[in-house]
Image 1 (cartoon, helix red, strand yellow):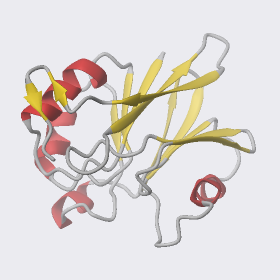
Image 2: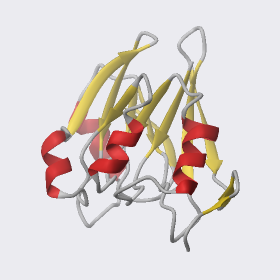
Image 3: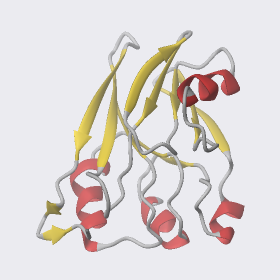
Amino acid sequence: MRIAVISDTHAGAPTPWMQAVYQAYLEPADVLVHCGDMTGQALWSFFLQHPCFYAVAGNMCEWELSRELEQRVSFTAAGLTVGVVHGWGQDRTGLSRKVAESFGPGYDLICFGHTHAPEWVRHGQAWVVNPGSLRESGSAPTLAYVHVAPDGGLTREAVAVPRVLGGARAAG
């Protein structure tokens, strides 16, 4: 099983580049997780086409979208308990640990964003992943795949997404 984890897209609507990213990287995943800061309902609606999509609100989401989305979500996939939250605060030091502690015991995988910095670390029994930012402009866009082995073991694959994809060019 492959879980695609994205965050901090900071886009209100799908662009041609984001549509190409979806087709190449996100659609083939068994589960798609967005860790917040989509910012607009049109992008959220676009991602809803994935048959197994989970998302949380981020601190930059437009008001209507933040009313639709939960602040944190928990679900089960391939026998694993997964938690998702955006993240919080100006001081991002140790945020992965703070996020893991906020969920408490019993989680196998915790996904978060907010920092725009990829991370893969273990806190207690949980692996904690931050995919970085899949933002079209600014620094290099990234996402993460979490691969679930038949025995339940987890590995992360960090993916740097090209700025030109399927004939579409990312802004910036």
